Image (cartoon, rainbow, N blue to C red; front, side):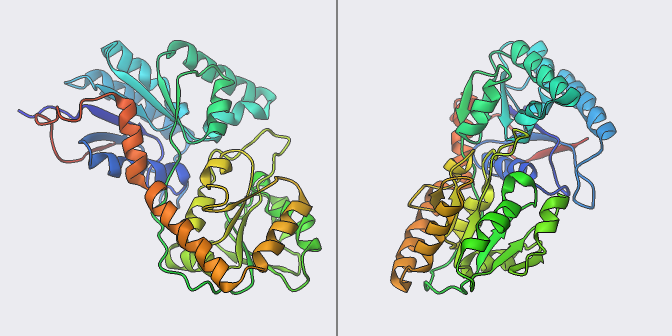
Length: 370
């Protein structure tokens, strides 16, 4: 009789919900499956792309705990997809002290306590209790910034594993359409409204900003009324890749809002680079690791309009040959480093398993959607 897989991955972020954490759960487990069979317990999102409601999340947590406790063979590795799920790890520890607890940390899931107020304080206390009970747990942070915020609530055993992208660009000609492109959710920390109000007015009058994304914030939406802004809504697949490649530059102008929110990684910067876009990214939060400054993108001082003006001016003055040379090196580096196979290998190393001792385990995926 074949045994259950040694690795048990539990996530509340799963399709058809759409988002960075959902992408992480799917892509990571797909890549780890190439290294070793993995059992997945996942909570599917809603058909409209939104995450499940609170009631379903609470029920999922109880069901996941029961499945861990009743599992015929204890998992050697219990990997939780984000910090909110830490109580499930208690079930793994009750089964055996030898089960290795691994928890992924992303951004909002570790920084919500920074918002203050009753909710922020309660969430901070929730994470501190977890860090006390699970003091030996390994935290996989997607950037140094995420690791530092995780430490604020007591988590100490942290390993940095930057994220990846599936997007891959083809050979570039060095041509562009002269536009500046912003892609992402329209929330304060992403800096779109800040860029429109502080940088766009000091750029050459002929430059326009194309904005692709979804509006989550009223003030951000208001900024889109600027006559030099073209809002194109959400872009996906080939349309998104082509937008990255054809823009003169892709701006990721994150700021540091008073709420204390931060960018855990900044996958747009990595995607744009991999697609063949020239990326200008704010040197803040996880964006510092989402690009390699001078190789896959250009770092710009966050919140400094003049620094952004200078960086955009420099890129606009590149010759076709200079642009082509930069993009060729950028895409080559993205293909070799910002890949899910690399993320899976780095993650697998944290499990501490012997990769040669796998013959008795099942070889097919085992999804258990609660």
